[in-house]
Image 1 (cartoon, helix red, strand yellow):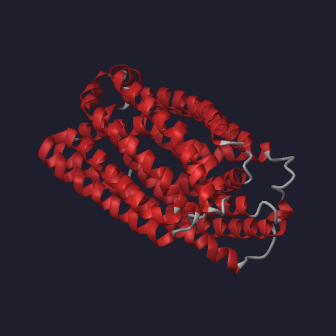
Image 2 (cartoon, rainbow, N blue to C red):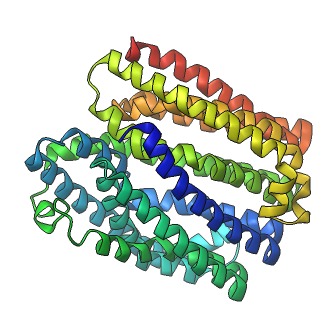
Length: 414
């Protein structure tokens, strides 16, 4: 399946996910408001960090090597067996940590002990979530895109109904509970979908732990863990700064803008994660790699430009549709945020080569460097220009990131 077909399927899945997100965010904005959205954003960032650690950070590696071992079933079975054991060890250890540290996590993120139960619930569902993500990574590596995307569609529909109901009846508590249980419930749907699969069977997961495969996965684990730490933590620092120096409503406007970027770009990012990583992992020749990237830029960048322009022209309607009139102050953030989104996707097309080539050191250095620069730029420009300074910082940061990616990847492409 090529990038164009993958993009079409991704668009269908993303359209459903966006619809689900639209309803959920509308409910959040009505029942909780801008400051509540900021709290949920803070929790989402912490959630992302915890989930990556619990998965061992190996999922991109599993996708890459599953694709790379497409003609070696024995080696693939060793990879999957080792991956499952790593996932179980990490998730079980962190589940215990979450359950017994629930009070600490609740106090640190929410500034109150009232949400202990959220982390205890998360602790009990974390292992199920992690194994679910491992199976999805394997499906991605096998390039079974239709099954992979159909599962994502089912997950979005389930999330739409379940999360909305919980928000309607329990408001913030309902939103938080849904966030820590949604993907774990989908695990049982995944098992049902795979019940007659010819390759993903128990026999391919019962080999002994293999040190060589572990070393290969460790590179991806390091990259994922660094990314999982730097990105959410940098956003949490920025959000805390906005809440403290501007207001928590302003933090909610910024969070809403970040959410819009994530949602409309999902058409592109889903296609990249489901097609690009396994495809680039297969390629051995530099000329073929250049051709694949050229195809990516010719297809993806025009889509991003059209989507960004559409979101900008319809920004008033977007805010009305997704949120409430209380969020109108965020309209000033759109212009430079959307410019930053274009830079970001252009850079990510090159960054996927780093993942496919396991360029661990370069990936880690750039992740840390540009997470720090985003924090520094955001604080500096928000200090000088107020809320709009945050969108300036976003655009400048990803513009610099794109320039850096072009410079770094020249050696890998030529």
